[in-house]
Length: 132
Ligand SMILES: [Zn+2]
Image (tube, rainbow, N blue to C red; front, side, top):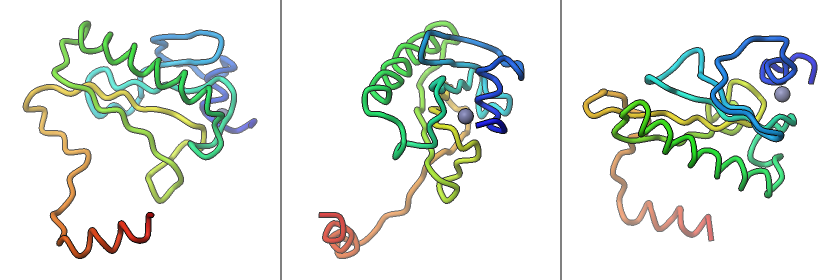
């Protein structure tokens, strides 16, 4: 994946503000942060999205998101954390290399990430039929 920005960061061809690194994972500050401390966690091997990444690595990267969430709560005095992970352009995946967003949240920060609208019971039942 020559042109992948995250692969370039991993190879050291582009700089990053590194927070954590081990043999499988790299975590660094998002250059377009939603909030103070907004961090991206990526696998060092190039995987496209949740449909592509091996299950064991998914478990591992999830455990790192927990570790960094605890770290960010403590060090940044965050009041909460959003974990966000997007797959495919329809879901606003911009960099096509699997990544998890760790987004520290602060009381009254005014950020609205996800906010649905109430649906009728009949609509929910229709969706349930499609899913099961
Ligand atoms: Zn990549």
